[in-house]
Image 1 (tube, rainbow, N blue to C red):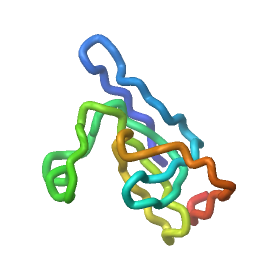
Image 2: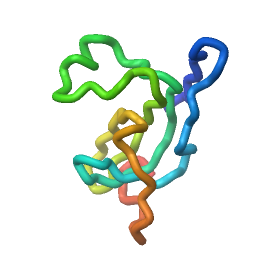
Image 3: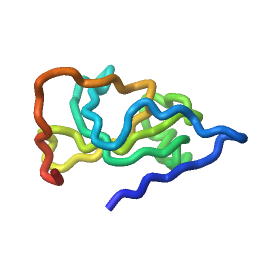
Length: 96
């Protein structure tokens, strides 16, 4: 079970654009998924963060996304890399 983690950014909480249950699409990799949790700042460690080809800003919300048609993949994605999925797709994930 995933738990929503909230971290304070100074005295304010970063603006979360996607709530739990929102269907989203990755802007660059074009996969679709469902938001199941989020962190107001990147909670991943430096080793994980630096191991990726791109490093979106850590000071923004990051989402735990169940990726459709992936055989069980869960992704951790920066808000700047997501957009609302308005296609008529349904959730197709083994954990749903």
